[in-house]
Length: 156
Image (cartoon, rainbow, N blue to C red; front, side, top):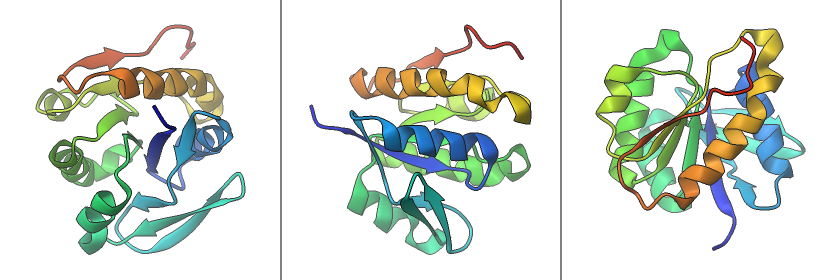
């Protein structure tokens, strides 16, 4: 199997920015150069540029780049956008690492999902190993709908 193609969503948030930096350093992962958002913006992660694409181009870019896993830390205040993102992931068969348990939405997901704990801003570094493990676990899942919880070793 080749490198795991990872898309991060929720930039410029602190936790997802740290996830993007770590993904870019992993030999078995490829940080994709685009992310989902409401308007075009540009971000940097460990020297790599990530372009946030506008809503109307989302389906086209997902089809073009075919991420294996999406790490979506869309802020709680944007729950409708998160719901729309999950629908796209299901449509494209993209596995999902979610930044918190949004049970009602995630229960309806038709793809494997990993949930990592939501932590205080100063504790973001604690979840990075869990997110890396979640990405690797999901990349090996055979596509069956399943929810994994990654919570151990995090002092919240």
